[in-house]
Length: 515
Image (tube, rainbow, N blue to C red; front, side, top):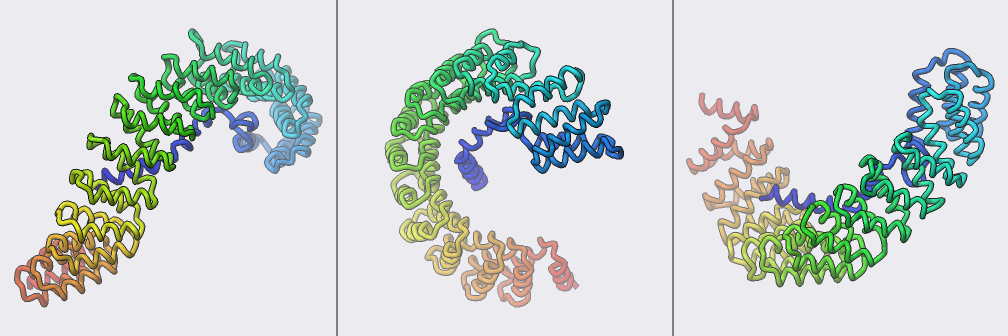
């Protein structure tokens, strides 16, 4: 059960960064928004370095090219452009002229000298049609077409059917969104529409560009894509971007998508996108789904995201939902959502549930999450519950909760329970969990407790807990018990646990007894 709890807690922490994870959809683009062609500077430099390493640098031409590489790496664009220009003039027959033309264009692009970029790329494509740099040159041509406002070139790149790479089309479309959004949306409709033979990769990136544009026409197209049956991955991407808008008009659509049975992943995407809207109406819709969703999975997902909003309205919604709900599984998810908020009001609600007439299962769940808060106020609440509640299962859960808390006050409380609790069973539980902590202070405490304790049953539990720590200090205490304990039963218990150890000193101790 404890491992399951840990998994649930970890998943909660992971989900709290859901927006960050979802934004990684941008990484499917071949470049970041606003970044240079071919993935940005790091990838460019890496490829240039590989190229230089594979080239002969023992001759003057090779040394000149390497100098240009170093200037690119230092971001000295002006000198880099001059160096590659000189290379082309000085070594016109060299095998690397095509590469020099490309990197000359690259350095010029960094300076905003786009007409010169175009002329050098045109020369590369004309004179070296079989060069390994042709694909990169064509992509850069499209990129600078956008910078130069050449919508004709961008349109041509998008109309070339299968003759262009997907990455080139994506660059062209990104630039067209900046220069002529209406025309860009028209191309999106062609790429996404029925009968399109575009790859999923292209379609998914096109939807991302559509979402980034944030225009009214683009938003309407996203709505159409989200509604249309078809590729769930493409729909989920469109739904995600709808969640990034501030437009409340999309909220009803997101709710409908979440509540319509069908693809579970689409439903989850719609609930997540709805959760990204900070408006009160979005909170209200999530609350409605949490209360009355026709499918348990929809209710659970909505409950989780209500809990992530961390505001008064969402907390009140969760608190009210818990009080009115009858399904134990739903109550469990509401408890988790309340616990993830943390803070005084969450703690107060959890302790109220722990003290209530709810089922044992629900009360224990509340105690678990109260302990996960880990603060000193929670220690006080748990200690008070232990003193006031006589239900053995609840007391066990409180002790377990205290044992999982990392602050010293919780540890001290556990020691106090082991020493003074009125119930032997409660003391034994505390002693057991102290033994699981495997720390010098815990061993010291158990050693002292054994010496002062008179109850044979409790002393037997202390022996077991000492054995579980597997520390040298604990093993030597067990040896001391074998030597000095008057009770044969306790001597046998200590000897048994010594026999379970692989410690060399413990083994020799047993061998000496047997001689």
